[in-house]
Length: 247
Image (cartoon, rainbow, N blue to C red; front, side, top):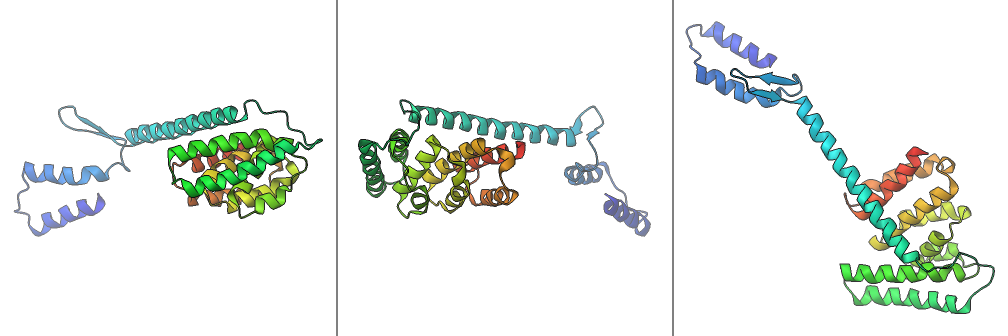
């Protein structure tokens, strides 16, 4: 605005005989109006029309924030519903007695998961089958006595890692928190990444947000930009970070 005013003043001094008609003034006004939002809340034009800037922007920002929050809440409800469905019928977690049938079931499901990834391309149908396998792992893994969770989390086999996540979701172990964080941040497969964040959220609830080291929070925050914006993985991690910020 200042530059424009100085420019007009210079033109007036150099060419005092130059006439500026109404059309020129209106064109100048149209040119500068979009740039006035940072200066004025609103401008009232002759005849009544009123242009509002900051208040309109605030309303737009607030609406976008509400939409994002609602999207996250809906996704959270959906995730909770899937988890509840997956865990339905599972027994209370205990590894006091090893169940050979459960151990065999876990091995079968690990192999089934590998075959599924090889035989089906990424699709909603494959995701449905993956969730079914995860649901069965939620029921079977708590009945396996003292599985080697560390080795399972570090395994190159995706089905084995999924079994570890299922076990830690059904039976959170605070002693495995650091190993879980490392596994979650290493995880590359989208389906496993999503559920690993859900498992991490359960672990935070079990451990207590105030017990999570600041370094871990920083690592998780650094991971967020690497996820596709608006994806279920991103929203799942955002829910974990929200727990940590509240804590």
